[in-house]
Length: 390
Ligand code: PLP
Image 1: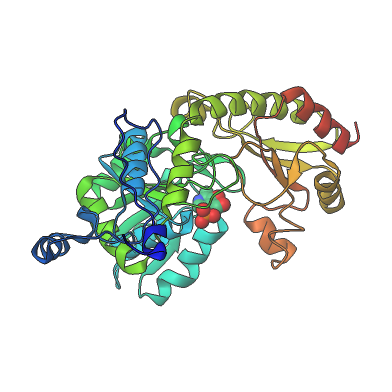
Image 2: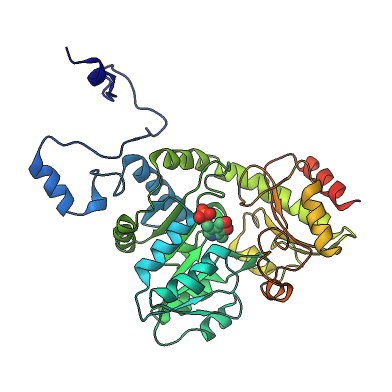
């Protein structure tokens, strides 16, 4: 008989007869054992991400997540990551080489803006920030040596929408690869790969995971392009854990139900806020007053997501007070989960910028960012009305 310690090691083999599990097993292993050196050598030389050899390269739980998300996005393949930022930086490191020129929309998540303005130039990649998220401004920023154009389906901070079909056509004509961060929409509301995007990015920390309990990301696209992204990801190493991959799949199972409810609640809240005397302006693409409302009806027919920006008439003090007064909603960074989250960028996330710098990127004194969750909408309406003092 083997010793206690030997026997205390896990033995995943279960000899009992039975059916298949409904949940994907969590293959919580760093590596995979082989009886045959030649087989192991053959698998390693035939492509590191193509088989199960070492979990930074590929793992069965991750692979199940990637199949699920590729299917939801209408893409041939997906690569999963330990964060949305790992998906973004690895994709850009794959697509852009020293000497290339990359065009970014003006309406970017802060981490992406930092990558564009600091990291890419260090790698010898030239970057231009377009004057806005609109197709004509993005095209005006392109040059003969532009290889990549990067936009968000729904952009920060005013929930602007990129005209993805028109932009994808123009990018194809110029042989420019279009990368779309679809985090604010998720594949339930929009599938950029079906509209012509070459790579779709998701921060699965947000709607895909949906419960504020994991950090993760994905890149989706053609099988060939994703093979290249995986090769770079194996070297850069931003791999998700098997447990986080499993949690993401568990979240995805209720994505449609959550987002259906979130979009309906967000529209009611946006309508209430727009008619409130303490509110100067609501930026929600589901409202006819949003500049991209017509585009939203075309690109987001199921709903305009749970993200909105709200400008309070009372400025800095009113914004801070609102976030500290809400009780059902919570003040926190992040978005896209079951809880309604509010944040006041001017006093929390953008304090390093002066007022004019902040305002140049749309972060005015009274601006709130709201991510609507799945709470009873009557509770949220009452909570917001109370925090506005009305
Ligand atoms: N893209 C968008 C639109 C985001 O809002 C975020 C984070 O808030 C990210 C990417 C980065 O994702 P992560 O925090 O998972 O790295």
